[in-house]
Amino acid sequence: MENLKSVAYFCMEYGIESDVRLYAGGLGILAGDYMKEACDQDYPVIGIGILWKQGYGEQLIDPKTGEPYDAYKNRVYPFLEDTGVTVTVPIRRRDVKIKVWQYKAHGVHNLYLLDTDVDGNDGEARWITGQLYGWFGEERVAQEMVLGIGGVRAIRALGLNPAVYHFNEGHALFAGLELIREKMDRGMRFREAWEETRKEVVFTTHTPVPEGNETHPIDRLLYMGANLNLTKRQLKAIGGEPFNMTAAALRLSRISNAVSDLHRITAQKMWKKVKGRSEIIGITNGIHIPTWVDRKMLELAEAYNGSKASGEELWNRHMHNKDALIAFIRERTGVKLDRDVLLVGFARRAAPYKRSGLLLSDMEFLEPLLDERKLQIVFSGKAHPLDDTGKRIITEITAKAREYPDSIVFLENYDMEIGRMLTRGADIWLNNPRRPQEASGTSGMKAAMNGVLNVSVLDGWWPEACIHGVNGWQFGDGFQSDNPAKADRHDLKALKTCLLEEVLPTYYEKRSKWVEMMAASIKTTREAFSMKRVMDEYYKRMYNAVSEG
Ligand SMILES: *Cc1c(COP(=O)(O)O)cnc(C)c1O
Image (tube, rainbow, N blue to C red; front, top):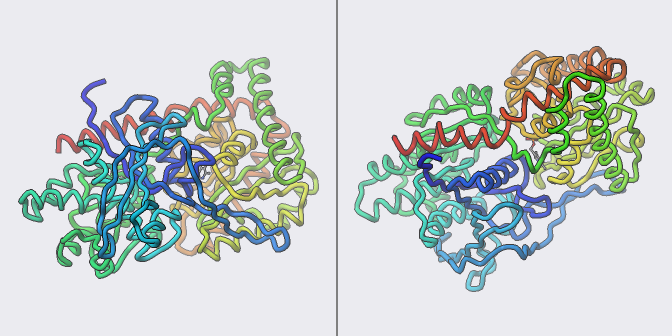
């Protein structure tokens, strides 16, 4: 390959292997898939992340109340290699030691993980890398200082000198301040150091919900030492007051990307007022196919030619995956779902905009379908440990699962393994966020490539992929409203119509059309939404643009 720039990729979380709990959700899954693809294709990429002692909480359901509760346990990963490197970052006026580990397993060998749980640190410092997204305020700033400032120092101590720094989300922003500090230490003035740093940095934004974009009072950053000798005025020039991590990353980067085309439009609107920000382009997310997709399904979809025999082979393989899911659910919950009934899959973080309970909000519609054994639903998802609204959403679903024990199931402790089972074994993949709040979504891509048909509103990646009635279905026609109740009513009505008039009749009465759609789903998505395509676009449109900038 032609002269590829070396890249250091920064992310708070990495989803590489189900039981390696260094991830919370979609952001981490993307980062893990990115690292795997980079290793598969030999891209000159290193990853910087944090070795979370406890990671993201396990979330179980109280069998009495049906409410979710969180559990944490310390983790040890024997496959980590000690690099022998330790760096120091002054945090809250004392030196914190950070040990650097190298991840060497599961097809990933170039990921460096930072760890403050080392001898010589005080008890509080040892817990900085304790829980992923565990705290807010000062604790979050400390975590982000480890990732950003510690990350750049680790890179130097390892003797590396990447041409490009890629911040996957604003959490890594302090790496930009460290890059400025290095240059100022060599004698550059602030403005020039900022300009030079911008040329090295690219940024990916993921959050179209304003509240999801983190801010801190500037005084907090000064008190914590995150400013690295920059003055209040200089910080304000970068991130505003309060200091907005996303706005700062936009001003500290040469170019940025949103994670789907629709998200690009949303993000451009949202950050219009940020003066001096980088251009936001759209690079739609993708998935690492070997991790998520059944190879056999890919082969059979490729071989599918419309003949009865090739259709049957594809269908039988799907039923094999569906049986595996049904067995998995039985083992976990004791519930035995029916292989001949349409199986709806839905797994999401329990954030209100994702509307996990939308279909359950109309039992008058749903109950007869469940009673007549026309459909069955399996849910999974976690709420953020500090999010009571999210926890209520889960409690409502578990209550319904108890009311309809043969046809509604909730799988506790959503993780990569559950994600993989569901996106292979369901018949349809339901996705009903409030448009345009789903930046991309990748679970639908996993489903699509496994021949699990998407039934989704036109949000995130789906407008780019959907050929209605050919490779899946859309509902809602892209309707948007500032009034959430109105949007919910509109989309629920559209979902019901889509199920009654299209999905159910096709499933039960036109099986050969269904199978044709499965093949189309796989064929139309496997390249366009692969991590390979994402990496190629990052290189063409971001990393190269930076080196020439
Ligand atoms: C794929 C995946 C995600 C991201 O999917 P979304 O469509 O963004 O919700 C989150 N968590 C797990 C465990 C996954 O496997």
